[in-house]
Length: 228
Ligand SMILES: C[S@@+](CC[C@H](N)C(=O)[O-])C[C@H]1O[C@@H](n2cnc3c(N)ncnc32)[C@H](O)[C@@H]1O
Image 1 (tube, rainbow, N blue to C red):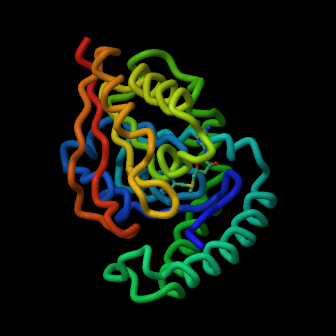
Image 2: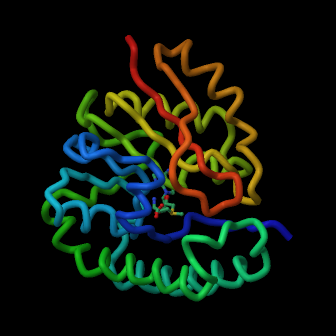
């Protein structure tokens, strides 16, 4: 059976993975960045420690730390089981095996948990959803969205994706989305229609290769730039 996950799941990658997934240059890292759907990733805490300006937005931040931790534990068990059953959908070069991947992800999420209360107090973790972002127009130079859109193409239709991308492009001058695959490893069923529709909204859109591949074939991001 192909890899599936039913609900919103807390699962977090680290700064090195974000750098690779979005091919972030030194210039990119100077920009004001919105991380949409960052969940319990350590991107924010690690980047902030390096002087980056990052705000993360996610519905998860409405939840108490103890409850997030419980959900992470349950998710880790489910993800480990699914990875073991679907090993061939993934490229095992960066991570030697499932145990190493799970340990890396849990370490990233521990860093997030240790920063959670401070990050909320500093306004770095903001509760909100991608369809209606709680920010003014042009608030950020760059919005990044990892493993939230496209991945769940079965659950979320084309209209949801177009609204989300329009909203991200409203609050940020440039938007990058990774990956472009659905759970199960196929290219998102919505991608062709998204690429046709965005130019009609005054948005330039291109697929860009990145130096990261974990889902087999998933080494491209979508780059969206407002032209009007
Ligand atoms: C698989 S996790 C990815 C976390 C992180 N971006 C990473 O790559 O490590 C998906 C995240 O999307 C968040 N999410 C779900 N629905 C969302 C929505 N409507 N708007 C923003 N984030 C959402 C979940 O709460 C979860 O934290």
